[in-house]
Length: 182
Image (cartoon, rainbow, N blue to C red):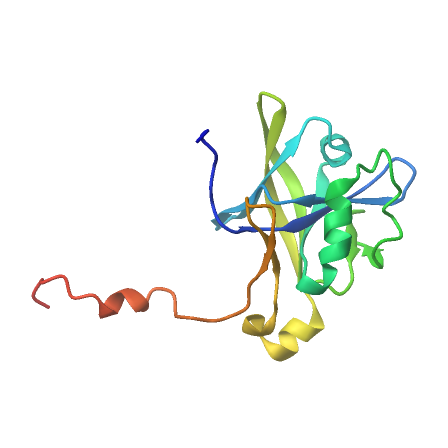
């Protein structure tokens, strides 16, 4: 087997920018990771051909959205077609953040990001982004994070969902007895 970064599944996000004509463009990105909490950082990786990459280089701001299972068709569409080929401005209802980045309505989380650093590796650009604003949908505030079914992607080319709470961070390890005296 050829080496691949096999993490399964990976979160799927929608990254939004404004095009030169003032319309929004959205692309599906699975190459995303939390890079830190203090300061709040994200990393995304984009191929050099991505229109979003070009606009992020120019505008220095973008939005990163966490879609729900119900958004799967639109999310897939955003990953299938370039903003150079298709106008994706009408796919989602959105407003503009004060930074000028498009905020999609009805997605559980939107992180408004400012470019901190860009690293080129062959034909890929890895962006380190400062999260300057986090917008949580009102439905998530009302029902809680465990109730949402976010969309994820497997390297087997299938979509998956999250949403089931199975434990508490920094507590489950207390159940392990490693033979040390307490």
